[in-house]
Image 1 (cartoon, rainbow, N blue to C red):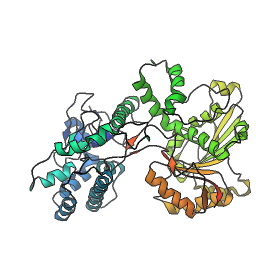
Image 2 (image 1 turned 180 degrees about the horizontal axis):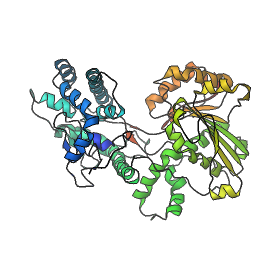
Image 3 (image 1 turned 180 degrees about the vertical axis):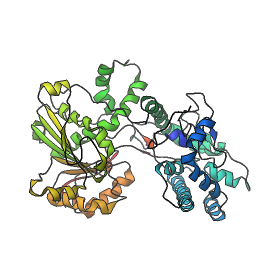
Image 4 (image 1 turned 135 degrees about the horizontal axis):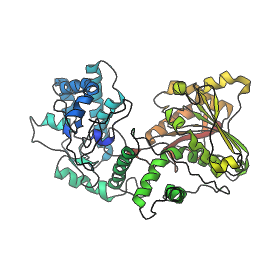
Length: 482
């Protein structure tokens, strides 16, 4: 029998690229299985009839809609009129073509389904195999085949996550893909191909370690004897946490591929406390009195499931500030209304590591299922400013109306605040919103890359280049009005 999939679990990237079963996630390389496309829509693949039948209830609607898309004259014309026969090395131009194809498909599918696309369906549209030089997808190639010589998408033999439709196009983009550092020094000088290879390793790691593909929640047990400012050397995750991980798990230090894979996964959660510490360091500059405080409060705005799952990770702040005895973390956001432990409106003292317990160092987590400005209004005179308010990957650029009042409150009250985002485009957009709210952005806190971003990269959707990760960019840090 096929593995039963959690209905809320999103299939891995390899499933969207037809390299893994869309139901059980077995892949066509590591597990020696043959992935066959759905014969009707050809948008997903399965390792066998059992998985296809098990997934049919979820896939049926999209399957019918996609099959009708290829027969719809207007949509065919829109897609094919966007095809550019030229071979491009201007990746932003190719990415624009990808986004155009995606918009056209989403518009048709929503109309055909008479409802919004689910997250799984959006991912099927957003992460399609596309030629790196012209943006052609499998679907566009099938539509073209009635009037043009048939092309075929092939994958890079080294990473398997970049595609090309003909040898001419591959020859043109191969140097960009496998020879030149991607975005200069932004990713330690690694090429797109090398980064993609790491993503393949990470996908397999998460599927092996967790049924729902969740990241590794690892908190180092050691405590630092003194505060050491966070520097910006290359490979900072390996430098900061490599020895701790080896000491705790007894791994072979020579196996750097396995070690780096583990640390990339762990960095998803550890990015939260490390980003907080780095921001406090930037806010305070040469004044290190904040590192000697015995009590600290951090408010996490727009908190959701991820922050509650990895709430224990905030203990790393205590582990790096030896004078700190009490840390209070407020998780605040309307998406927390279904959290059970702690329940909204309550606070919970977290179980600490043996060292913190022995030294009577305590961390408490409070949950409030409100937007932050609503929480402040409800608290009234009982409200006290935190040492830092931080919004991780908040998405305010897509929901400005929901964040405008909170942004203005933070500015008016002079609360030390910072917003992070998944991508540069989001960061630039959110920085504009913060400035419109009156924020005076602090140099060094956005919009710019976060040196303590999660190293667990994922491909950006509707593009042939680009990556995103948790807290990848600072949108803006501020403390008061411009």
